[in-house]
Length: 399
Ligand SMILES: [Ca+2]
Ligand SMILES: [Ca+2]
Image (cartoon, rainbow, N blue to C red):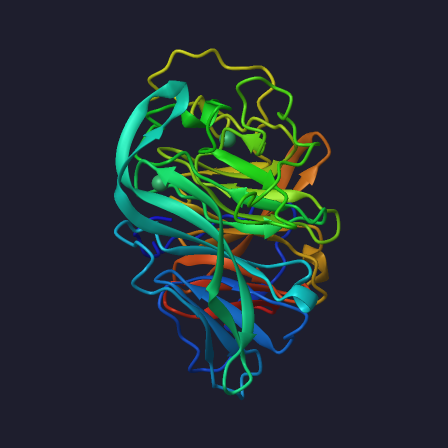
């Protein structure tokens, strides 16, 4: 994400004809939020959208546009550290067994006493920030609405952050019941410590951990089938590596593939499909180009995983990864990964073509900076925007 607002320019569609779509406000006309960053759903509460705001709230919002009453599900406003534009309450997930255990997981950034952290190559640096991933139980409030039981917090991970930006922030359960955690390179520019290309640190990675049966003594387990558990000097939590700031990772509900929008620095924004053990190249590469600003003189490995699709900074400055569309309303989009740019507000969809370059179509533009997508129970897509509103992707030509 960047602190920029929409730049008006027209995107030229490439490849197949783009389906005619538009973005219409979801929920009631009064449903407006302070920097919405995420929308989640649970089958136990099907008429409610859980909207996450960057300052630190999760709100229960009726999906029925005729209903306006919201309730607060979780609130850490003032406890989360939002000194940097990219900090705050960044991630939220329901436990796969939420219906029976009532557990939820939250990712936020917080301020700590100045601490020393170890970066790639054993280099030490000091800062007063960290990322936190905690598990909470839930209960009913006096009106019978579900709320997070704040006293039930169990901290699963605390990850030292050298700088305020590039915190990743998605936590999401895979079809394998494992928790996937998207972490950026730590921040600043150029990945100054080289975290992305070091398997000794968690920054610049997507992690895969087992949080079933988490306790204070053992908050998570490393799955035995993670790619680097046997590699000396590598962190077993790593699922894939060499990412810069994975801003939203999501699973294709049909295939189980893991998709990612990885935010670029100077020239290129990326869409990647994340595979076990894959090295996505940062900071040796930015998209399919060699990244020339890097300070290290490491050789470029031959087995880097290239992005599925990329776009230059003429088309936007910060990718927001969405979902592979599996809804019914727009059949032409089935199997296409939908994504957007936070700065230009352009929206696209891409599809892999078995060895040939991916197809990309333009889906127009949203009204304000798109911060995240959401996937409803029926597979239709929502997008949260920094005009405070949540929009739904629907068929039809924009008037
Ligand atoms: Ca950071
Ligand atoms: Ca890359």
